[in-house]
Length: 594
Ligand code: C2O
Image 1: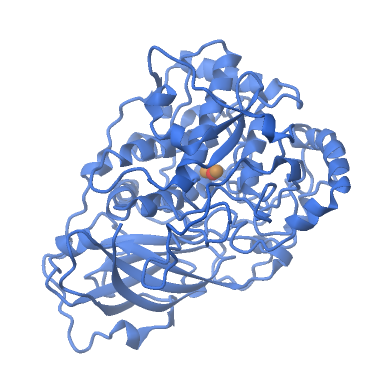
Image 2 (image 1 turned 120 degrees about the vertical axis):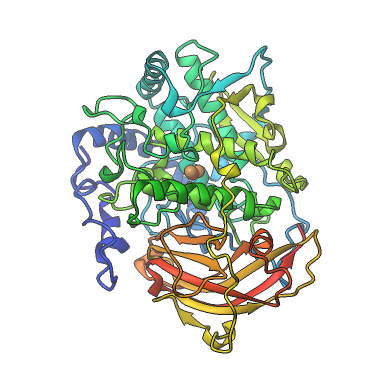
């Protein structure tokens, strides 16, 4: 067994959690021995596969030193691990034009697929994530098979025993497929690894389908083929992936079907946070530290967060989907609202803090090794469908570079196929829909906690008097705004930040509040949104301060707080986790035409 030489071993010593002595809080338990002494089952699951695959792949790699050196090219802003910039948009004047000329992203360069890297570290993923083909010129477009009836994806908390048995059987059979079979559970997880951890190159730099506008369509196609493989395993073309209904109170815990006291279920994964197993209410904005609040408050906060991420903060396509990535791979990345919170937060909430890189769910290369991954994403997928029903400018992106981008997958007949973004925009055309569940956040428009406007007296400082400042305590200041914002424009609050991205950080933003703000309750008009950073491990282990502009759409708040006629707005920033690792350089309000 590959015990002492397990490649993850070398990653523990540059891991920020295990060497972090300057941190004011003990964010995580000591790193476990899991990766130092992998137990037989893990070694059997991954190590053996590693041996088989690496033998073939490292030969290929040696023959092509060029691909290796390419893979070492500039990885800035690309291998971000999970989390990072909250919608790092340049929305204001001087921002890059998101519709600049470039091209759709072609099929990944499989011939030059190289080793994958674990987040920002210099550690390589200990097995090869590349698919078993290299010549993509012969790959045909996938034709969506005809169907007579829509399949219905159920909510994970509401399935019955017969469904659960089928689900377990399908996953078990996928796990038993040989390593040479692209439909195997392991190989399906590697699809995610290859697209997310720099195995593919795009224009000479690592190709990453997170942190940009491909987040939703890539994962929709990915789940589509995964689901078809499950169906073929159990000869049931009506079988579907459950969705983890985390936006609805009955679904706001770890779904019970994935847990198993005896740890024997094919849906069980031991590399999970043991404090967050079935029964604990989750925090949709989790940033590495459990927020202390009673369960009903947590639930209300989650609903408020959903309302903000789906409605208030996502009135425009690019705010929801994320920033463009085009074939030239030159623009800086930026997540959409849902990708950041709750998607990233839920990954980290499930991932095991005892693992060096929060494997499985807490790191892209390993996330899809946990069966719950596909359920998390089934609900992310559902959010896309729901978002388009919410009105306003909430429609799919019309840009051809997005629509004509192609991905490579394997279907249930082991055939490599290519697909376009434009063919997955409507889930019903793909043959599935979602079980109806209440969408309580839709009507959870937060209400005002303060009935009166706080007056901005002379003692209240302007943002320019207070900033730059570290967020080691609550900060209150006023920001000026124009009182004549056209109806068609979104008013945006922007915070220029410099932060240490190796640290857990979360802060919340409130309007018309001062230092006395109740920071525990988020179901209030005054709550504008949250910034979250989940730590990255850096190449070589050194931390570089990261800059970003955190943008929040505040038109609705301005209206509901009755501030439309005011040329000054009171802003309070409340650090929840790791505030001393972030400096707010500047705060300003501008408008966005989406
Ligand atoms: Cu591709 Cu939830 O990550």
